[in-house]
Image (cartoon, rainbow, N blue to C red; front, side, top):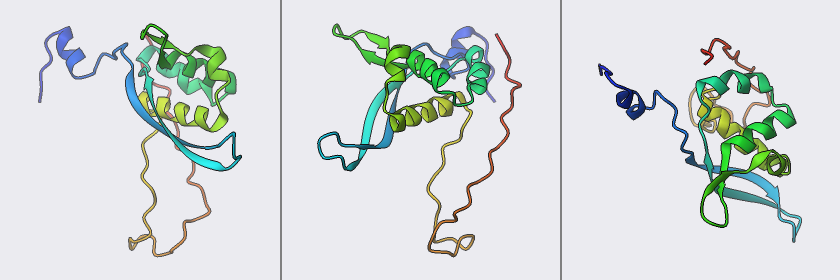
Length: 150
């Protein structure tokens, strides 16, 4: 067990959320504008991890398009012409391609601890002897709204 004695100790273990954005790999499917064919895309983006003060607000967002755009606009960073990191802002986030917006929103919720990263279903285990995946979707898990507010 580690005993934390200083603010630096809390920061070192990530108990105090950094303002510095972290790189994340985002994957999504989109349409190539020149061929109109579906394409798999991947991008490296910089996302700021939500702090506890923002956590409950993200829980309340309920995937509303404007609220999602607001959170993406504040959480996703790009370099400006001088190389300085800047949030993309609400207007740009509102204009993102829907599948890309969904992929970024999912990653923000992962950073906030609201979703767990899932791996593809295995078809080789004894628990799933079928060669096809089930059409049933898992039931949504309840989200605790008991996060401390700052």
